[in-house]
Amino acid sequence: MFRWFGWEVAFPLMLPPIIGLVVIGLFQTGPQPLDIDWGKILDFAPWTLCFFALTLVGSSLRRTQERHSQRRVVFWSLILVAGVTSMYLSLLIIWRQAQSWQPNGQVWIASSLLCFIATGLCYALERK
Image (tube, rainbow, N blue to C red; front, side, top):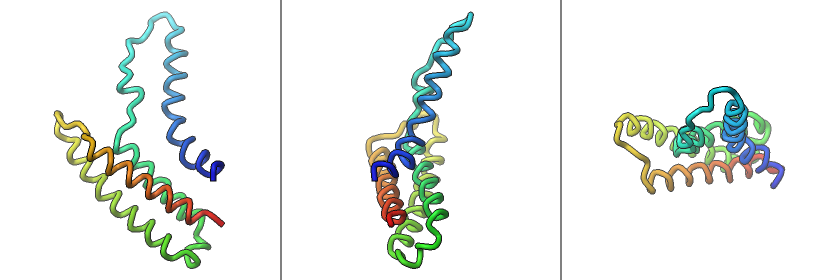
């Protein structure tokens, strides 16, 4: 489980911020230091969790095609979670159009819950 979690969840979520930090560090060695807006560099938002959940579901479904008939409940649960996550993501995109909108605690909880459920179901589908 730890191997799967590391490669499928932790690595994809952590790699972009790490690359950003390395590039900023390298850029700072140049002649004109950059005034860094850390909020933009380390942007980890509810829509990030939703996009990640959809990507994880898609890749898991693709890799486990031969097991779908053996694990129908998990398969259809993943399809349902992907549909709900897609609808919620469309709401986030609409809400984000308001310039003053900031995600509140309920948005973070819903996005985290959808990502957590998708991760658990993907692991259950890929488990042998």
